[in-house]
Length: 199
Ligand SMILES: [Zn+2]
Image (tube, rainbow, N blue to C red; front, side):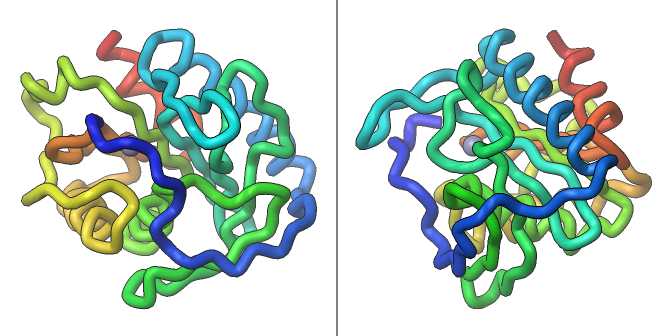
């Protein structure tokens, strides 16, 4: 939310090359780019300034055979290509560390995606967006995190994963107190269905 962008707060062992994806994963990657652009055009992924230009907030991912593919940082929704998606291949939440393959580092909130996928084996895709107005008046039925923590930290990821675990089934929406929203589903269609129904 009000916090300014400072890049990832976790350590990342990044193999700087294009991730290898199967045919289905490539199709899903293109769908993920569309999803990212849609959220931006709806005003749910506003711009911010970073060292070399403007980026857009919000981050999106889906599970693959070897981990999950997530939007990279920095990126701008309007000009994103497949090169702006990075494959997270492993990690250790306690150690605040991820391993990834891609041309750019994974999203500064990739640790949260990692924690949710670990906590929810049935979750196949995650979308994260910012909506300060809705955050001030969280709709009924949305699970809220138990507390607040700075975005991108281990504590932030743990709060999100705990809230996700409290939801039974493969899909749900979480309010990240003081920050924004996360929706997960068995695939990208299911993950974005609930958020799109709000707007
Ligand atoms: Zn965020």
